Length: 158
Image (cartoon, rainbow, N blue to C red; front, side, top):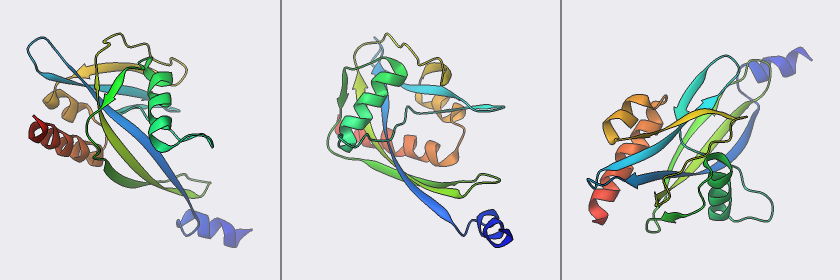
């Protein structure tokens, strides 16, 4: 039992997970992009990031992304921009359980419907934020880097 605890505590035993997310934006009347961020509930804190999901057994990755996007923010008319995806990873550390080696694949999506209805049992709220505000709100450096790369990608797509 102590051996397992030591392995778990030092991250030697790790579960692998893959999540699929859409980083969505709206275009306001001035043609400025506003990115959709969600404020995720956690045990004793909260943080800003993007709608996320895991696929059901019957779904492909993009189907999972669109389904969970609809479940978390109530929008089902997201148009995926191009075929490019972005990827990041991180280690989710837990004190008494095995760490999770998480890989996240992102698509970029444009949203026409501006009516957001969050899943209140999982989220504290949402924000439509311009690039600078979004960068400052995002709680993790790797999510900031993804947004920087997506902004570059969108400027090249025009």
